[in-house]
Length: 487
Image (cartoon, rainbow, N blue to C red):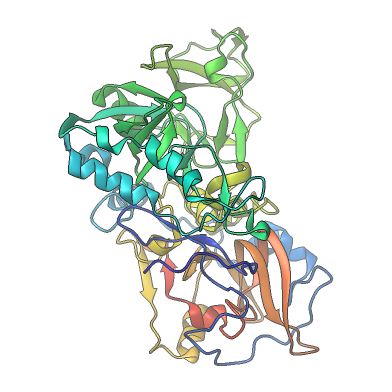
């Protein structure tokens, strides 16, 4: 998928991450109200009434996962066994799988290689027009973080170093905390936001900023800048051995925290998002951990950063009442639905802003809790060689698209340029989805005028009535139907 234009001053109907450049990009591209569509809508959407919430063909009982579980065929049937899930997880790091196998990064990095990564990281689909105070962004404002990349100091050859993230931390396109936006009414989408690292994620350290406060790293998602204080540096063996450990606990809630332990601030109240898998700590039953008994908690092992920046490991506690599991959840339709609905109502978070996630973050974290690793952007989710998918082009008719959607299963993903949605079931033959989306755009059945409902959160909606822009239905903009749970 080619990178589209940066956002206009009009609100978007959908926004999400999408794959475009070599490693990673986020596209804010689909559904600018009033843009020219490349596809024409081929049929009238559903004529069902609009609910008081402003969502068409919707009723309150649809906000419960149990509503959809009852409608799902064989909801507790295991769709992929553990070995099949593991094989798909491995393929995600293979050719065209969408994720980067850091173990294949060469031990020696060249200047051209690192400089190319730095250039790739700077590509952002969101134009920097105003700053946090609403002031126009000048070239001088942007030049400061660009100078901080210190690309002129990249050596001709350097040894690749390795590290683990020690907390939930943002990835940045440039080494700066400054925030830039495309417009005053587009502050949900920050120009330099490039994603997130969760605790325990590996990185290859390739460079550092001029002010020494940032590391330039290659992640499994692609290259980015990360705060130096949020990464602990260790040997490749220590880093990859930790990542390879069997999960002791997997976070199955939308977000949980480790137990508060002032004796060990590095692992106290750490935020752990859905799908984060932590190895079990070697702690005897009832043995105290950081000032508290472990008998009513799960001891887990976490990376910490020593004062000199080096990597160490420390035990931490997760309450037994926290929403975690002893391993990845079984791949069933009921589990997919329950996991997805744990995010219902969470605010949309571009690149995991606002301690939340965006559309592809929603889908990838649901599946991560079941052991599947999806690429971090919607474009790659739609074509990853690790997944089964039906691709669509302009030659596919509206009727053909509807037939495919009629056969879609719970957990299938619908990819349109810049956005991804998850099928949760059918009502009267019409597919319904859960999606993390700013707006629902549809024709009001009473007036036949285009109507826009601001959602800006994880939402349940019908699929067929929704428009990608003022002329194109989602159905006709669909580029891929991803059958995630097929072997």
